[in-house]
Length: 247
Image (cartoon, rainbow, N blue to C red):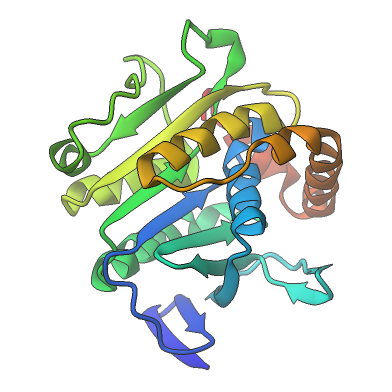
């Protein structure tokens, strides 16, 4: 097992040495509609991606569960060919958001990734004729000018880990895009997550089946609600005060 200390408080532990040169990093968080987590989890399952490692922090959430007869960690790393997914089953605590996201950004650049695709969510009450919006770094627009997803409206805000990652990728002049599907604010929204997955399919020219995601919407909602209930005793106050208005 390889230990890669990218930050004294945040470290990447990989099962074996990996060559990430030219890979795409996918990442999503627990925001409105749980779109980030649902889309990342579905992509991992549908691609049958291999778990290749973990991210360990000083104050990791005190939760594990079992999936496919294996212990799951709060922050896991999966890979299928050139697609690498950082899957946060639980969010890092608020005080670690900054160093956690900054370390991921620096690690992805140091390891030679070519781009990052991030997923969040927008309050469905604000929806216009589009089913999602996007935020691009300047480097992404320069590298992929053919991408025509409508940009997020001025006056709306991104908060939390996703905001930090976009900031740092912009500062590093790195190609990154955030996909923001309109989602139900009050519950996990697999339909909204499927809109993000469809865009990821187009960007990467892959085929992740979204029909299965829509068919299993009820089960997914129950699973996510169970995770939320499990973490609530530790972070309920933070989540209620820091959920953000739009993402």
